[in-house]
Image (tube, rainbow, N blue to C red):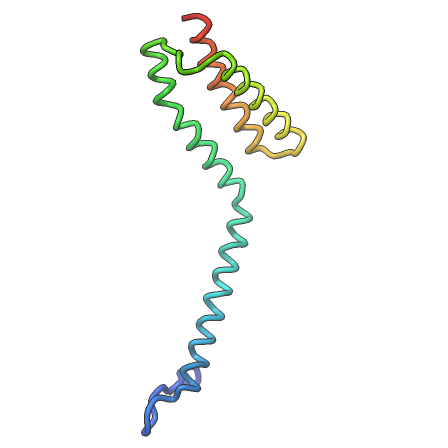
Length: 124
């Protein structure tokens, strides 16, 4: 028998003390593994930001395609588009000030989307 294995059975029954030690060791390893996963998640915050930007932009594709086909922008008021453009200009500024690329790129891309919608609203 190796030194790492703990016998769980004895002649008179289960050795609960050794079983508890085994469970505690495995639980400690699982907790350490979970902590390492959380740390790696923090390291990948830029990846999460990029994923959020991509999914947000993709969610506008059907709207932009519908506007391209129909030239109908009645769901968007000028006030709505003006506030959206202003908001995203502020996000771009915040991204520059805070040196956060996710905010900067998000602001730029959404500004472009709302500019696209405003273009169709004004010219069609």
